[in-house]
Image (cartoon, rainbow, N blue to C red; front, side, top):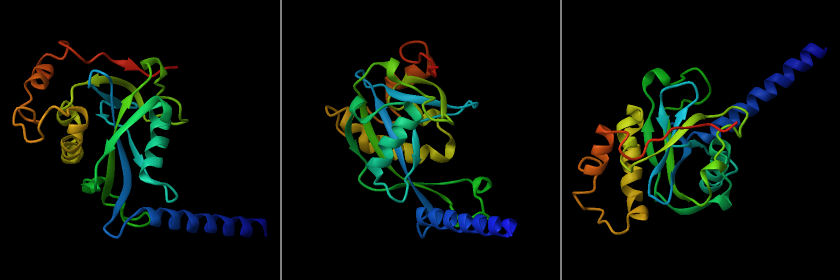
Length: 216
């Protein structure tokens, strides 16, 4: 009897998990998500390495059914970077969802509702605290194991290919928040013509790129 009851509880748990996951996927198959662009006083961006991989990205994470995008952003910020809301200033966010599709090999076709990619609201934050306050292992399962400051357009050259377009859209839309003196239509300050960023890529030790391992 206890075995049957256990089976019943497991089935209820599976149904509850399916329903919760189902609410997270929209009718087009995209899961709501937030992306976080952290900057410092020198207008460099926080760039983090995924645990155990040679893969770098901005912090990001899913939005729970009971959260607003901003609430999810602050939760993910604390879980992945170890920073609380009072340690940052919210500069702004993208106006609409930005979407990317997952490669076919990453799509799980036999596990709950089909998820083909992410739709994201991107936030730009300025860090108000010292770098010693960053803590990448605040969560039980850390997302990152190292980080560094990089120039504004650098992530477009390093992020995994299927996220590149959404990174470009977010950086272009949020650029005026960090560079208000620049025109958004200035051809001399774009992902493809930013000379200082190109120099930084060719000579990585010329200005930014000190590596910070996670704090123990």
